[in-house]
Image (cartoon, rainbow, N blue to C red; front, side, top):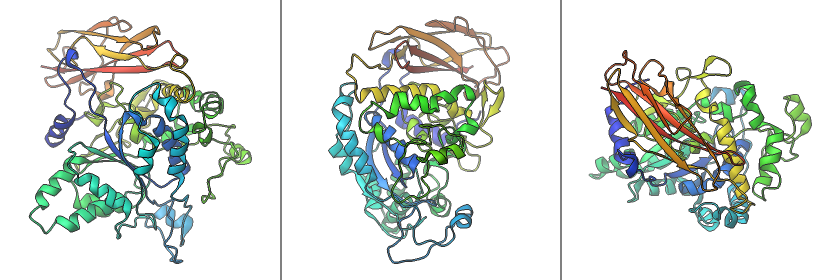
Length: 503
């Protein structure tokens, strides 16, 4: 609940302004993105899922980087101690730490190549395996936070930030920010003392958007924040846990079946092709080379943590690309709207930084409490069903598999109304498989700036309505979500969002 800063509003309006009428709705350009990763087990599982959604993005780069948990060392026996207190206490001086190497992404792209032709039967736009292999780079991997040297990965990120494509570049940080920091530092060193610097500085600030899952080294705080304070940042410190190692603690019991071994065995791990056969799960008997702490595959270890065979381990980095999926929730227009990648609010200290954290909660209907992870957890069932459908795409014909409905509004998606006024909402959907469709209109109260509830009449029909409460103030917003779910297997859901601003 906050007022959008003018700088941020101008940025989003420039890049992702929505057409005012439903009749003019068009699918926006695919978001351009670069993934940086340290190769932990949850990065691998996130990467496998990312490949199934590769048609939804313009993937511009895949870059190995280090973090406080994973670094390669310099090969000279140099001892290193982490700058991060918890890691320093846990590991002390090391020459390297749990390094999984720089070939695993290429391996999974090769496995993707084996299902590529089948995926293309279900949706256009999947990048070729050869293209994906061509954009893999090795970044700054020697030590946690190492950013003194230019690397092929940092040079590649630099080249994308400086190219002539003006589209935003979402820099997904699955490990440390050091390779991105090195790219930015190289730009600064090359241009800061030249007449081109003001233009270059603006260009990079206009393009770069960092989505970081925690701070896994100190380079954002030490270099990026003070030197590039106008770069847009989306920072996920709490909500990702619903898709990470601690999920049994934060995911409501009612949603945990979607993360269970039974669900993964039936829907993902088996009989879905060679790529998903390598998805890591508890008690699967597998071990990542180079990471002695990846013991999740041992059933004895699973039992220690009360895990069943094939239970979900973690995809802690997946919210970084869930955010980029256009499912109709409009969350890329404004991170406070909330969507599959969570919900964040504008920082009071830096208007270019958006954060989750203890102050950002959604009401959890299962626990009847405000919950810091529920802005992400609330989508688990639909996200997992969507994942299962994509897994089917790897092996099934178009006729055998399910595909999401296409949802449209029959009214503008931004409306204005007076207190006490009547608002009519109308939408519809088509299903590519001819499945029956269920409709639900609901208010996303936490995304509103109006502090209250509205009563939606005919909320389970295509056409619904509500009365703007008389106590709504001028400028208040009310967010109404049209949610459409098909009757296919697995059931798939898409949306449209109407934002009503009170006069």
